[in-house]
Image (tube, rainbow over all chains, first blue to last red; front, side):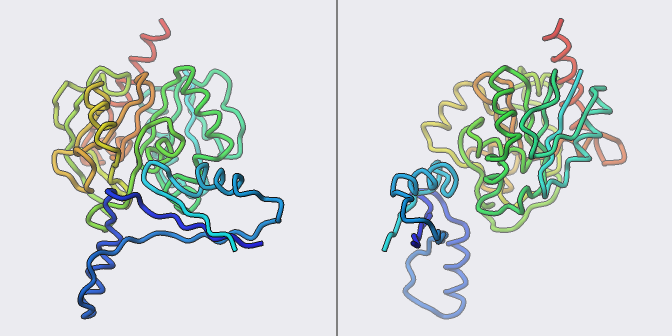
Length: 76
Length: 225
């Protein structure tokens, strides 16, 4: 079973990478881009016995830094 | 006196740190590999050096913070053993929760590698007692993720408690309130992005880092007495 985990910076936390990507997009001539925030997607292939609570625990203990990041768990 | 320098795969300032600690403090200093589950018995001082532990995978310091040896470091810090984290070591200490906040990508995106000015904001700690309050010193930085972040309430509390040890005189990485070095609430854990071990000999171009280690040994001897 595969689960995708999206780790993103919390609102209000400055994202220098997103800002640089934004500038690069503008440099390529893409107009109308208001803001860019960069994050990370982690795909986990796991046994069916792994619960949502387990996945949340993986996120808060390692995959996300809860000081600056949020996570979303996407299970199919 | 016994000191331990923690060594991870990807550490690259471990040897410089070992030389600085050993030569300036005179401590019996050992490298301790990340797979160890305990520190040498009687360890009086722990240094977590700079580098790119575990290739900075996931986040700088994230993997190292979960390594076996760091559980022993956290336990030792809880017993009051001084822990110095420099650069990647600072990142690791925030990831373990020994220090609050997080170190993010530099606001200017670029890796910053040069000497910077620091103001000593707290000269009362075991690490900073060799400096004068408000003194300006020069220490090199070399990092990509040195942009200190914490929420405003945390920053206010840290400032109020005198836990900002060093502040940049010019903000080279976007750090909140120019924070370059931070103490824990008990004052026995210091994390800092600049590298004091790289300013300990006249051939380095300066010796401002030397007093951190010299002050540390005096403080420790005083504590033991």
